[in-house]
Structures are given as structure tokens and as C-alpha cells.
Length: 550
Ligand SMILES: C[S@@+](CC[C@H](N)C(=O)[O-])C[C@H]1O[C@@H](n2cnc3c(N)ncnc32)[C@H](O)[C@@H]1O
Image 1 (tube, rainbow, N blue to C red):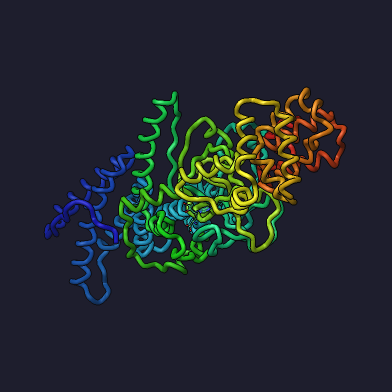
Image 2: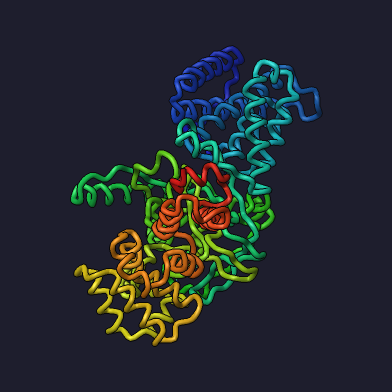
């Protein structure tokens, strides 16, 4: 599998001449390696390895029955070291498959080669194979060389144990980081798949489904991006050009990852590229559990590389913008415009009455339940702003290239007189009294016999009027007897469409106005909404901080 770079040097009959050439290549490769010129050091190491291996085989041929001379075991040791260094160079260049192959070659020659074990552990960590990485570092820590590297090794072991536990249990706590104002290093996260599976969806193609009941805030998954591109966009025109440049860089970056890593290529290959989704294959969930994926794909090296056109179509259908109104970016990426691709989340369909939400931390996407979800229910999150009337949402979903078939869209289109709702929307646009708009919608709901969640859908569609009204004491006072109280409206919207910062803010403001008058029950109600917004990855003090509930 690993291709040798450069030309194969000739076999040498003269041992001195050979020794000289080997020394020359070794010191050149080492120098380039130490100066972190990865691509060049890789080339010279390849020449060195080819030359050594050629010599080894020719000597072995001359000594067919054992009795391998000392010079050969010396050469084998040198090959091991060169393979480990070449693996390190490949790892630094993002060439994970080839790096892993080099480590395994080195370990075939010397089963506990210290450097090869450390590098293999690092590569496996980058491939999210935490348990296998932990095994490599454990073996390395038993080697004599471990003493000289004990600090680094204990750090790696500690990191690996933490990530392995996280990936098994989904126990993540971002509280300290949030309370510390996102200062310092990003919290390191592990990929995690909760009680969810991909199945055929009534919305379109495949979707992600809950296998157990989940209450608001339950972690559904944590997934690392295959690629992300971020930049700062200034001014509209400049922004557009910059966005195009970013998109091109993003496409190139993802294409490069799929060439270098068969896992990424296979993962990307499962995603929809905008074709008829009804015929798409349902993936086995084991492919999303890094330690199990080989059971599905085997160790077969043959995989077809994805054509550029296909990569572009896949990115068109499945990329998400980090700082979208429907998502939350934590930490320093808040200042950037970022677009990325995450594989398992790409199986999550959109709904205008979603039950999940996404958070972005570094290159990880965290998806959690934004309201209670029943076992068997499809897990959905919003791709765009759902606190908008159905016509506007239609435009946004058509920009995404599909027509939303969620229950809320169907209800609003089939059950609500278009003209009447249009008038309310126009009223909102031209700025009529917000209380009167809310009153007219509430009256309409009685006439249209809207029940249960349907009220939440319609209130979410005219959310601009409700939030404007509750924010103005004057309007709220004026309409107090004719419109529902803020708490009831917030509850119905959250129950129907899950948590959204703008909705929960109204609840928080009401709580603040009451000056604690609502008591513990009110406080707990708002905390539950906070969990739906930010997930159980935050404890109460951190939730309070993010919700500005001080
Ligand atoms: C990120 S993918 C979601 C997974 C996709 N259903 C699949 O089978 O791979 C986005 C695509 O799913 C479809 N989709 C997602 N949400 C939908 C919805 N609410 N209504 C109709 N189609 C939807 C659209 O074709 C959209 O382009």
C-alpha cells in the first residue's frame, strides 16, 4: 500500500560504499525531520528504507537457513527507526493511513518499537480509536525508553483514558470552560454515539432515530468534522467574495482528507449527494463507532476515491454553517464564519418542529435533545431559522434544495387560511400594534380549532410579534386581559419546537422581572429550558452564566 517515494537506489556490492551512502541518507533525513520539513524528510527516508530493505532481502537470500549476520539486524533496527520517523512525518502531513501502515511495518520487525508505538497511538487518536491508542501507549510505557519520556507518556495515557471514557459514556462537562469565559485551551472531546440509529425516514431518505426515551438535554452524539473552514467576513461584498474563496478552500480541504484517509472517504461516500434519497443505503451504526468500524469494512485497502463532482454535491447537501441562528457556537469560534461537514449529523433531517439542537465546540458538533424525545421518534434539528412564518421557511428550505415535509409545515399549509395569516405577517412588517397582532392570531387559533402543539407552531411562526409585545411593558399592560401570559406562550413554543435562545430569553426576562417571586418551581422550569438549549454538558452555574441568569 505505501508507495516508496523517489527512485530506488541500486544494490551495492561494496559494503563500505553502502555504509557511506546509508549514513549520508540517514543524516540528511534526520536533519530535514528535525527542521520539520516533513515532505522532504519523508522522501529521503523512503530512499533510505528502500535501500536497506533491498540489502536485507539480498543477504537473506544468501543465507536461506537462519544465521542472519549482525549487519542485518543492525539494518533492521535502522529500518524500524526510519519507518517510525516517516510515519511521524506522514502523520504531521495528515496522511493518517500511510502513517499507520508505516507504524505497523515497523512493529512487524520489532514488536515493541517505542517510537513506532507512540506514533501509532497518536495516529489512532486522530482516527478517534481511543481504546486501541490507549493500548499502544500502555505497551510503550513498558519499554526501557519510557523512563526518559515519562511525563509525555503519562500525559498521553491520561488524555487517552479520558477520551476513551467519554466515547463510551458521553460524560462531558464543559462547565469550567464556560465559567472561565472560554479562556485557555479548548476542551478536548471524544466522538460519542448515544442511543440512536439511522433508519428510513418519512421526511426524506434516511434519518436518525431515538432508541430510548431521552429527556431535554440528553446527549445524542458528539462528532468531529471531516473538514471545517473558518474566516472573518467583513462587509457584504467583501464577505461574498471571501465566502466563495472559503468554499473553495473547504472543498479542497475535504477532498484532500478523503484522498489521504480511507475512513473519511468511506464515510463521505455514504452521504446523500442530492439524488433520490429513497434508494440510499442505511448504514450499520458500527461504522460510527471507531473501534468497531473495521468489523464492517474489514481491513481491505481497496476503496474507490470520490470524484470531485461527487464531493461538491455531497458538501452542497450536507454542510452546516456553525454560526447559524439555529445553532450555538461556544468559545473563540464565535467570532468566525465557519462552514464544515460532520458525517453522522449529516443523517439528521431538518424539521420546523425539531426536538434536537446543535452546539459547536472547536471542530466538534454536539447534538442533544432540545425537548423530551420518545423511543422510536425521529431526531431532527433545524437547518435554518424556524421562528418564521411558513412561506419564509419554504424559501429557506428551497435554498437548501428541498421542500420541507414536516408536520408543522403540513399543518400550517393545509389548515390555516393563507390570506389571513399573510395579513398578520404584513402587520408585523409595517409595524402595527404588536398586541393587536397577537390578539388576532390567538382569536384565529380558536376559529381554526388549533389544538395542543399546533398553537405552539403558530405562535412560533409569529414569534416576532409575541417577543416584541412581551418586551414592551406598555403593550403587555394594554393587552394584558386579551392575550395569554408570556409563560404560557413560551411553554407552548418550547414544547412544540424545542428550545431556542430568543424564546427562552423571554422566560428569563419574566423571571428577572418577578425578582425571584416565581420561586423554586419557576426557576426549575427555566433551568429545564436551559438544558434543552445547551444540553446536559453544562451544570447549573454554567447554565446560569450562559442564560445571563445572575
Ligand atoms: C443532511 S441530509 C439529511 C439526511 C438525508 N435524508 C439522507 O438520507 O442522507 C439533507 C437532505 O435531507 C433531505 N431533508 C432533510 N430534512 C428534510 C425535510 N424536513 N423535508 C424533506 N426533505 C428533507 C433533503 O433532501 C436534504 O437535502
